[in-house]
Image (tube, rainbow, N blue to C red; front, side, top):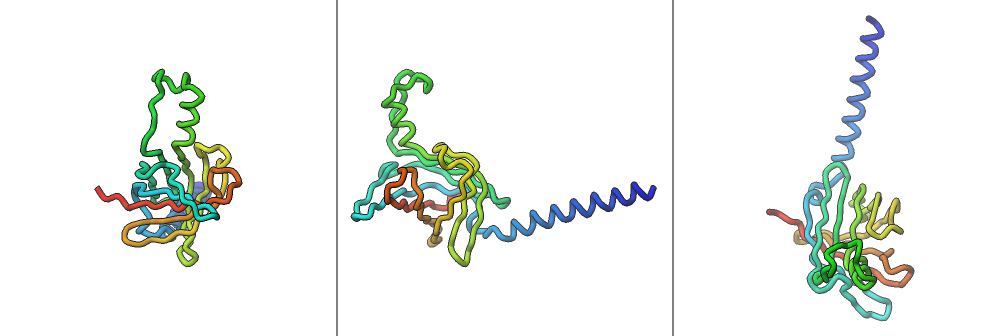
Length: 172
């Protein structure tokens, strides 16, 4: 009987500790960030001052942050070509290039450092496999229902380019 009581107490203690850890994490997630965001723009800037919109003037995308620290993100070029064969496994080399260069997606965990205005993405998997299992910190600003962050380690492989990504909070 003593073992049963001790086991019950241990289970209750462990559950309580796990629940308080979850609640502590939820308290660290600012309310303004949670929910669904729609993509406004992706603007790449080069050291010579040139600006490029790699996903077009009106890119499509969605970013979701939940209260448990999970996120998912998808970005698509505004004008995409269809695969002529209707089968992505039979796409031509040109179609494959357009598919890869016209999209970016990743998911994982996130953390917000409000005092330093940093979002940390702990990327689990990405459409660009070089980002799998990476931790990326991005400075951000939040004004007028828009989240802007700066990507310094873009998918352009070593080129000196920064991307400013702008999202708007979506309210149905």
